Length: 305
Image (tube, rainbow, N blue to C red; front, side):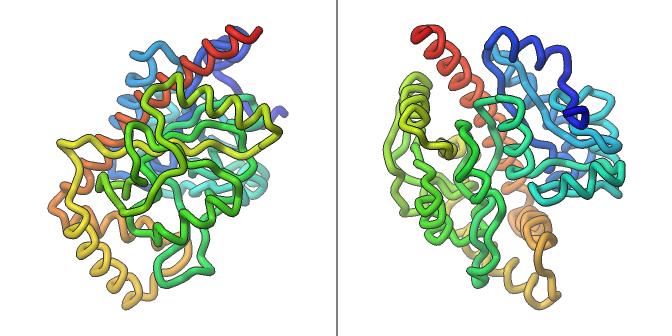
């Protein structure tokens, strides 16, 4: 498809079947302020490279999808204010109108699935919103039809985590706890919810994922990694901040796509910046783990060929 442009590094990795890790750009365009956003984007790519994998940052620029966004393009996305947040439903609009934008989890999955990338590292997935069970993120639907290993810190803590966990089960998405028995709550290491299985190494994850797909499943394997101990926040305190932020969003009449950016920004304010630091730390950790899993998957393929 002429609307998808692969960087030389990504094309080389795909041809050679060497480890590749997809990275999103909505965190750059809509998740973090400048220049923290572009600094993070480069840091995530570096984390992937240090583990021997090729980063494939995915974004939309002037009506084309780029897999392996250049440093100059990242800078442009990081600074532009009039860019679209691109989920699965938005590609037709953005590409036909020649727009630019950052891909969400769902949007990144759509592209990664098309080009054959098998691992995607992100922060937290979307899910079912609190007090609005009809408001379900497209992330969950794309996870149900995208055969990738998706590495995250669970779902964003501002969501209804038990309901999100149920929808993942409905869509046939196995939840693998990476060195944990508990579904993390994004900023916090615990949520009180179980995972489907624990895996303690990249090789274990790779074997589970490959067997899952060999059985004819086309859904993702969700690998949940607790935030680093030194950056994690107490669950009880996070809950108090979230309840206050949700109440303020309701009072201001904020709904739909504007809810998550508002809540995350308000959380950063209420926490005195500690939630932002936790977010940055878990993103970097997930990129490392994702690259290690991509390496194990590549080794697994070589062994069975």
